[in-house]
Image 1 (cartoon, rainbow, N blue to C red):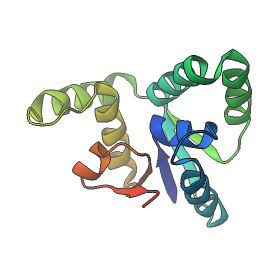
Image 2: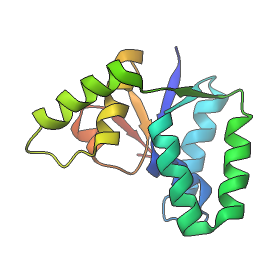
Image 3: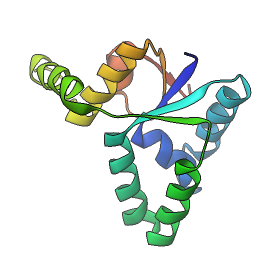
Image 4: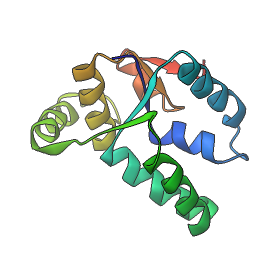
Length: 136
């Protein structure tokens, strides 16, 4: 599958015109879509993003974002579920020298399973795990 994983920070950068990474994040997302990639994310990331947009931009912005993503044929949601959650838990406790969130670990598990190499995010943890981060 040709996909670009989109993390909470990536969704937020694209949603918030006031975010310093807005323009380059939107450009990276649009380029990936033009090249036929799917935007891949998880239910955990969607939860974080929806909440963050509501807190920063308000409920109407969160509703508009949700409706756009929910109806998109170019976005693919991966559900974490029990097996992925267990793998993420092991990863979470294995990397004692890193400040990975549990959601980060669920994202890493999904990316590894789907063999995704790139993430749209401003979170340096993805780079620490060996993924290519966009925007550059």
